[in-house]
Length: 288
Image (tube, rainbow, N blue to C red):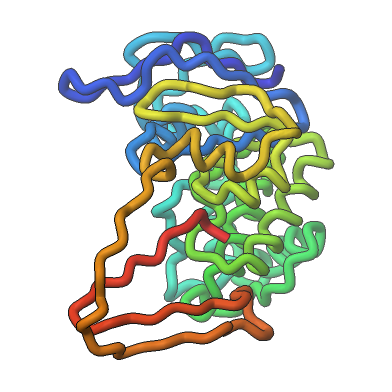
């Protein structure tokens, strides 16, 4: 294993967020961590990034015990992290953002590069991963998926041993998710191990070598079973997936909206429903 977590626990003000987590990531593999909001996924990412420290447990990287005390410490050990709430700086170029999100600053902290030099280096990096983004473009004009690809490529600039990404598919369409998936697959083939936390069950099954499930801070599944499908994981991570809600009569209400077999060239297929006055329609489902 490249990374091993042994009996990791974390609590805030007496409230346990992670409890007794035992987890390992093989070299050159992708581990997907599934869980609903509040399951502890982001806390686990922050621990690996050096942003916070565990109350108990040990972390091993390449068989050596580590205890990153801050994000730069984790970077120096070979762990790069992309947080869910990280954003490119809109007023700067893509090339400048690439240097902010990547390239170990320890040896270049006071060394200034021209935008042209940074664009040249960023362009070579993007070309390696097949990313079609102009390094001179302003980051504020990028689509959500292009911004995500830039952040991932930048994080790979120093060839980390482990790449950790919190919710890489968030707010992306299925086709955009596939672009991220293809990039992560290329990184895996280079030998880098990856951890992703996500609620996108379908893409996790497609991409990952191993799948773990976090539920209320506890690890309830840590080994992939290729016979298990999306429905299994939905039922495991969510209590509400098992619920069946009673129908309420709308026989005396006015129909205000009706859809009949809507679909076509979109992801939607044969969507049909009626909506009546005074109703609230909730649409739920796994991402994708």
